[in-house]
Amino acid sequence: MNAFTLLKADHKKVAGILEKIDETTERATKGREELFTQLKNELDVHTRIEEEILYPALEEYDETRAIALEAYEEHALVKQLLAELASAPKDDEEWTAKFTVLKENIEHHVEEEEGEMFTKARKVLSEDEIENLGERLQEAKQLQNSATAG
Ligand SMILES: [Fe+2]
Ligand SMILES: [Fe+2]
Image (cartoon, rainbow, N blue to C red; front, side, top):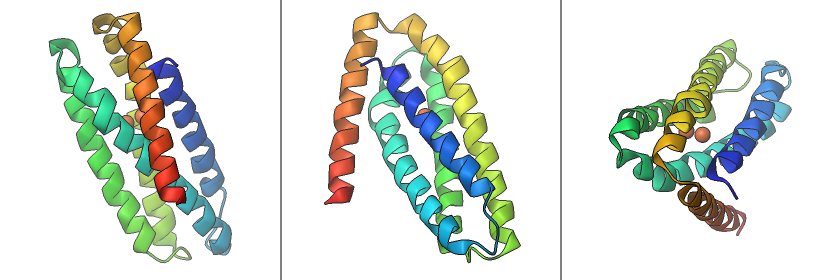
């Protein structure tokens, strides 16, 4: 499993959930709650495996160090917004506004990962290393998922 293929599949799943939440209104809070829980679970696992496996590997190279460090900061902002959204009332237009900011932040971050980060990473990592990272990401993801399910 190629690391970038795995992460892109996660990004696509997250983008789908974001679009669905975007279509909900203050009057449909139950659907909104359920979708938000799904989003939060996906992002918890995804950000964690990137921070534990991908970003540390990229920090080791001059070409990818800055963008990896930037990515940790972007995750921190996303997590802050997720925490605020989790505790705020879902039937309020403030929630909708905050969600829009979260969505924009995630879209920007994903664009940077799939663009600049993965492009530079392909230059410093060998095919074997990319495969190996993919396997580690997948294992970590399975572990995380079974931990939250159990
Ligand atoms: Fe990320
Ligand atoms: Fe990502």
